[in-house]
Image 1: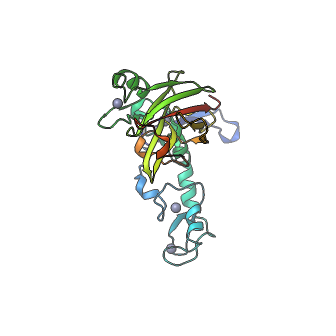
Image 2: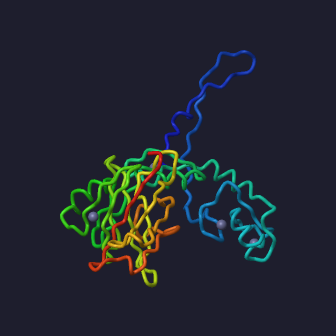
Image 3: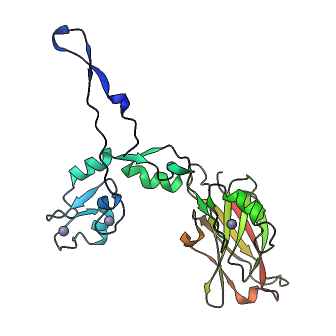
Length: 278
Ligand SMILES: [Zn+2]
Ligand SMILES: [Zn+2]
Ligand SMILES: [Zn+2]
Ligand SMILES: [Zn+2]
């Protein structure tokens, strides 16, 4: 809430009764209130409230989705989900603050309700380098990967294009491979999940930037068994979830590649086909 320029509202001309000549009146300016973010979160899920807030008769507030998941019973056992907490809704509607990534260059002033959506897509949000031991955190991850992770063959990125197939060699011990799009901006991770019995689970994550108007990039992964044209071709497709940090990635689905598909040097060839409107 701080840092807003309320100067535009400080002086305005107020019409006078009786046809008098308008005289400028100066309104007193007042500093905005500040409120700690933790104080305005749902009591149950601890997430910021959405546009509807409910309360039980004891005054405990809860967001709409918590009313449903709690079967419309507050933690104090009173019913919840019928009575809206309008005063709190009105206050939150009027609250604005600069984007959390202001220090990285974002100049947006965002409302309480729009904050989550804005920050999830904010192009000024920094990214963490996915390589173990690398501390890079910034806005130029694509460039950082190109410059600082090009020499080690295990870390070198593969350049891919949209609407074109790229074949990537993946070693069983590699936790991921970096895919850099030729647009010099978009970046993906082919993630090699090592947590499946008798094989590996492969999936794709997008490290942004998000395609405009479309939150996810579509992809298709294909693995053929080397030296065995008769073997089943494994494939799966889906939308690549967007992450800014590899640790945040949770695959929605994956391609299971059984141990028998990995060759004697413990590698497979993965064909990646990216599609999307960017
Ligand atoms: Zn909640
Ligand atoms: Zn209650
Ligand atoms: Zn922003
Ligand atoms: Zn790095």
